[in-house]
Amino acid sequence: MSIRILYFAGLREKLGLNEESVSLPEGLGTLGELKAWLCANGREALAETPNLRFAVNQNMARETDPVLDGDEVAFFPPVTGG
Amino acid sequence: MSIRILYFAGLREKLGLNEESVSLPEGLGTLGELKAWLCANGREALAETPNLRFAVNQNMARETDPVLDGDEVAFFPPVTGG
Amino acid sequence: MNTCIRVQEADFDLSTEVAALRGDDACVGAVVSFVGLVRDTNLGDGVSSMFLEHYPGMTEKALEQIVTQAQQRWDILGARVVHRVGELAPGDQIVLVAVSSLHRGEAFAACEFIMDYLKTQAPFWKREDTPQGARWVDARESDDQAAQRWESK
Amino acid sequence: MNTCIRVQEADFDLSTEVAALRGDDACVGAVVSFVGLVRDTNLGDGVSSMFLEHYPGMTEKALEQIVTQAQQRWDILGARVVHRVGELAPGDQIVLVAVSSLHRGEAFAACEFIMDYLKTQAPFWKREDTPQGARWVDARESDDQAAQRWESK
Image (tube, rainbow over the protein chains, first blue to last red):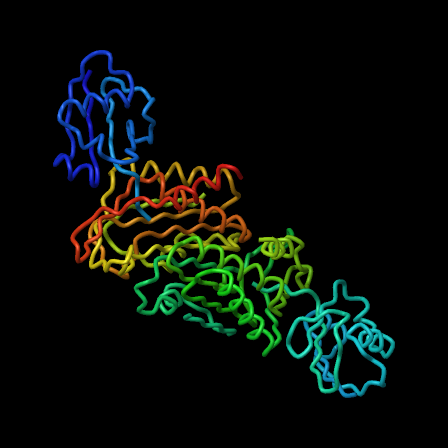
């Protein structure tokens, strides 16, 4: 399964990475599982970000929401605009 | 006791009068009594104005508030600005 | 407190008023403003023009008291009220209330409070010209309710 | 509904935006607008400049969803959101939310609702430059609370 992943703000800076495309092993069903897999594969900053937020295909999502092949997933700290 | 009286909006038009100075008999203590005296002396429109409002010396006042010699008293319908 | 209260026949410009409210105070993080406008219809009738009467002297005093109450209730940096009087046409601006503060919650509350109290406490009266003739606008029950909300808070 | 949502580097003019929001609709009786500004101090430190990052694509979508929710909840005639991104300096305008309606209550509520949701749902992030270096601004607990208020209403 292939996923496009975007990182923003402090998390982007910590990772030194705006975005990446990853091929994931079978059996990764949720955003939480994707996050855990990324943490175990060099993206520890995800675990160190308090109140990490998720978006799937540009909609806010939760840790328990599913990830599907071809999705655009974004990880970022709580938003602070306005 | 001498009082300056102002009328506004629909009440001013009904009376055909912006303002007047009246010399009042002794014993008129409150705005309500002043209103009753005026009604009995040709200013019936005061009684016909629903929810009549009062101001004494340019502060909103109530029917039970006192009237003193030299006061500026205003009668008007509920305000509708803004 | 940067306070300004004006009653005038002339129109006003929103950006200019907000710039004056802010001044050069870089503490200001939020400005909430309200503009009230003459509508071309009221209670089902067309309104071709409007006349705004007021009680000179008391008007300014009442507005100052309302702004002072807002300052006492909320942590605001400035407030500005401009109210027009005289002849107005549909689409014309009638009133501006603008409030500045560090954070938005205070500015929203104080701006709405000032408008709600202005509507019930400041001596302005509207007369509308309609095809049925001129009529003085009646006070709205909902305006009294809006002002009363703040008393229980 | 006269809706406009823009994310841009350029500054905006409040009067121009409100005029566009009103258009030539003489039904509009009330316009409430909010302007958020860069403050020169935050959490006790001087702020010399600010950078606003966003998530292109999602930002516009999130703002549209927030405005749609506001329309569903209140009887409003128009809404306009302009949010700046990129480098900003103290005193600069960051965001405008303006809402028009027949009567003021709806415009006040919808404008504050849109701002509260923007603060917690729209993907913008602020980085401040201070004498201690650059830092990403932390989300404020009070912003979550402000947004949650609307859920019980």
